[in-house]
Amino acid sequence: MATLLGGLATSHIPAIGNALAKGWQQEPYWKPFFDGFPPIHRWLNQVRPEVVVVFYNDHGLNFFLDKMPTFAVGAAAEYHNADEGWGIPTLPPLAGCPDLSWQIIRHLVACEFDVVTCQEMLVDHACTLPLKLFWPEYEVAPVQIVPIDINTVQFPLPTARRVYKLGQAVGEAIQRWDSDKRVLVMATGGLSHQLEGERAGFINKAFDQQFLESMVSNPEWATQFSDLELVERAGTQGVELLMWLAMRAALTRGGAGVRKVHSNYHIPISNTATGVMALECLA
Amino acid sequence: MSSPMRNPSDPSAPSDTHDIPGTTPFDGALAQKGYALNKMCFSFNHQANREAFVADPEGYMARYGLNPQQAEAVRSKQVLALLQAGGNAYYLAKFAGIFGLNMQDIGAQQTGVSKPEFMAKLAAANQQPDWPAAKLGV
Image (cartoon, rainbow over all chains, first blue to last red; front, side, top):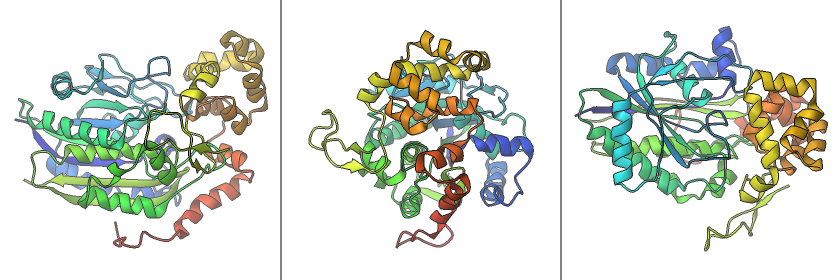
């Protein structure tokens, strides 16, 4: 069976794309964010994941309001990035893992999740930039991916409880996959931030800190909140912490808990309170 | 503008109770209101479309069937007006990108301060009190 090694999480701000392209990692504005990664790079070099299941939210690249899935699972052999109008470089295509995609799809549908399956899927900055952050020395991260998009565009959003259950089911699917591969789950997005409205620039440090701690020791904590309660506490785009919930829930299946490899929290990059975390599944 | 929270005893009912300050979640009512505006902004994923809009904004808006409120909001380039016209932040960001505006430009505009002031406010969030049980070095 496949091995679920652990989970990664990072903010995915588009401006990171420019910082990477222009080599700004040591600039004073960027250094406190980029410094959060080297301990995780060292861990990744040790554990050598082969496939990464990426929980992320499409920001209007692959999906529009005409057909808006709540949950969409990529099942392509390759995933292309494309122009999103943010003025950041388009990145090279990423390799998929259709075998794991279909394993996940079969298991999710058997668990009575109603997913959209995508045999072609453009992946936006939320999927591409984190792979660059965790594998900075590679033009293309040396992993196959299975992207799982969760709607954060059109309210009502899936409930935090439902997203948690989705994550658990994905974790089960990975554990039962008839393969020798080493698999990670990844969450991208968050932490607290708000782009629009009179409350643009909203950040909630105390909430983020409590959320980060819950990721280690109390994974179901945030499932008590409705989508609007998450907006109130974490900002309109802070609902991306739903991705972290899904990732963490996947790690609760079939293991003896997790240990935190490393985490980092830095305010601000763009409008965002940034979080980065790596968790290792204990045997 | 702020938006009512959903009724907890009937989550399927339209929002009707207390507000989230300075925030209007993009619900079904706004989706209906803003569909043409959002569809136009979604087209700005493609450079050719961005160029066509810049070359002839009135013609471009007419092709997407923007209503007068939406068209006026587009002409004004004011994000609060675009939100009121039913715009969704993810698509409006592509419109802002045409003019080289980043999230701090539009954040400053929406909150009525200068860009340096807006960026200072973001950095000042570091002075917010910690979560009381926060462990150091999280």
